[in-house]
Structure formats: C-alpha cells, structure tokens
Amino acid sequence: MTVLVRKLGVAKIMRVGQLLGLLTVYFEARLLHDSSWDTAAPVIVILLLALLVVSEFERLGDFLSIRGLVWVAHTLRSAGLGWAATGLIALIVVAFIPDTAENTVGQSIFWASGAIALAVSTYAFTLGRTRIKVRNYKLGNTEAETTVRITALSDLHQGEFVSANHIRKAVEISNAQSPDIVLLLGDYVDHDGGLADELLAEITNLKAKHGVFAVLGNHDIGASESHRIVEGFEADQSINLLSNNSVVIEFEPSGNVFSLQITGIESPAEWWDAQTGRFAEQVLKYEISQTSADFKLVASHHPDIFELCAEYGADLVVAGHTHGGQLAVPFTGRWLNVGRLAAKYFLGRYDRAKTTLIVTPGIGVGILPARLGVPPEVTLIELGID
Image (cartoon, rainbow, N blue to C red; front, side, top):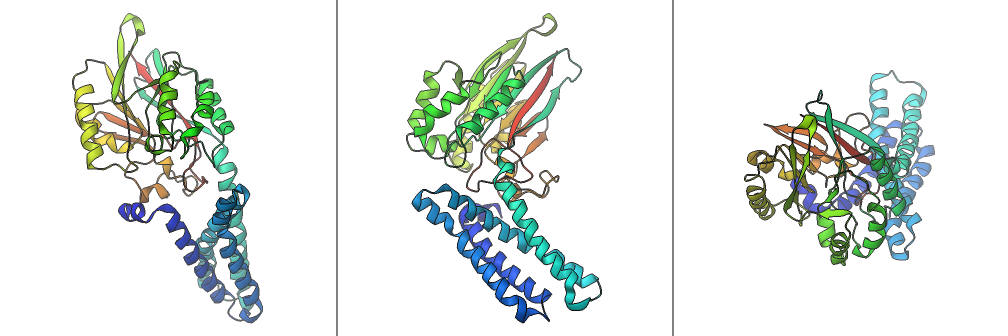
C-alpha cells in the first residue's frame, strides 16, 4: 500500500477518491430515498455535480493565483469524501431499525452526515491546521535533579499554505518552553527557496541556552534557489547547521560532566531509499561508533533512519517528514491515521533495543493543507540526566 501511495501521489489519489466518493454518495442516496427518489433525485444530483465542479476550482485558483478558490476546492473535496464515509452510517441504521414511513430516519441521518462532513472539513482546513500544541516526552532518569529540555520543530513548509505568522507563533511557543536545545528538522520552505530571508527572520528568534541545531530536509535541497537556504543558515550565527556531522554539548549535573552529542543527518531524497540508507550508514559509522559521549542524539528529517541508529547504538532519534499523517480520526492517535499508508514510523514514540525514536508531526502542511486529529506541534523532550 505504501509503495502504491508513493507511486500515484497524494494529489491524484485525492482527485480519484473525490469522484468515487461522490458516486458512493449517489448510490447511498438512491437506496435511502427508494420510495421518494423521483422527488429527491434532482436535488441530490445537482448537489453532487456542484461538489464535483467546485472541487476542481483548485486548478483554476492555482492558474489565477487566487488562494480562496484553492481553499474552497480542497474543503469541498474533503467534504465529499467525508460524506461518502459517514453516509454509510445511515445505511447501517436503516438495516437494523424497522422501516418507518419512507425511511425518514435513514434519510435524516444521511443529510446530517453530509452537514457534519462539511463542518469537519472546514475545521480541518482552518483551525485544525493553525492551532499549535505542545507535546511532551520524558526520557532518561525522570527522578534526576537535572533535566535537559529539548524542543523540536519540523516541516515548517513556509509557502502558499503556511505563513510567516504561523511560524512566528511556533517560535514563540518553543521559546516559552525555556529549552536548553532546539532542533530544527528540515523542510523549512515548501518549494520556493526565495523565501529564505523571510523564514530566517522568524526562526532566528528561537532561543536556547545551549544552541539551535538544524538539518536539511528534502524540500530544502530540492527547492528552487535552495542555495539561499543553506547560505542563510551558514551566515547566521544563531543557528548551527549540521550537515552529516556532530557537535558535543557538556552539562554538569551534581558536579559531574555529562556529554550529549548531536549528529545531524541530511535527507536529500523525497523517500528513503537504499542509496540514502548507505550514505546515512557511513555517517553513523563514523559519528556514532567512535564517540565517547554519554548520550548520542541523532537529528534527522527522515524517521526511516531509526533502525540504522539502533544498530549503531544511538540513544535518541528525533525526526519529522511524515507530518504525523496530518489526518486521523480524532483521539485515535496513530491507529486510524492516514500516515499508516505512507510510512512505517510516522508519529510519536517508538522503541527498539536501547534506542528511542520520536517523530514530530511538524508545524506546517504538505500537499493537502489540512489537519484533523494530528494538530501542528512543538515537541518538547525532557531528558533527565545524572
């Protein structure tokens, strides 16, 4: 399934899914309005055709550079898919409840499910993608007197769907956590490296007692004018760009010296492949195997590096890239999550031997500018050290 999703692409899947979804809604309506179909048919057919036509305003909006049309198209496309799914509830109800006059119970649920699908879709494309939360992970000795506070921000994707103001809000939330270390995990822009100056104006306001450390993601390397991103990071003294190398930070809890090594891995490819894995393995072999640091942290855009890091003895891997799936049934976490279709490690904490992986869902959005059940997040990691 993962391979198929990658091959077809999310945009094509959404377009085909919209068509299939609206056909599903049509047949659901036909079954539920059996005796009253002649009356209901014109309304339902016109409504579904309107949903289909308006959902294609995405292309018109892109062509005319009218963002409002794009938002409306995305919202209605998702509403159509949601209606197809929730409309099944009406069929189930009708199947188990004795027939009433003209199945009015099922018909009422059918129309209510359409309204709910539209409301949920509107939320996902507005508040769902802009309300940033803080998620906390506690590692190490939770009883230790000294705690290293690490915030992680990933997948900012500044561009047509993510504004500088949204990134500013994430920076303010990170600063409010009083972190010792900030990790920036890549994909700072969506496609336009020309936004580097505007981006840096925001993220250079990040504050951390022991430094801000950044790695590049596939969008940063593949963006137009990508050199501007790299040059901007290298020219700014407030951000340390780790390009397949490491830095060691020392703490002194209870008079002892505790060394923490951060190794940054670049992720040049959209998807993790054998070539990327071989290169990452060489970096880990040199940086991790030969270090004497007390704690070994790997910052990577791709979470797929997790198994290699466990093999080479890293203690913690912090990654992004997946956006946490972006869409999930609320309160189900990663169990009913779109991320399952695209990645093995896509959200939250995973453990393998002595190595822990934390995948942050990031700040921005990707191809689909919506979030449901997976809000944008500033990830806080509290590491207790002795």
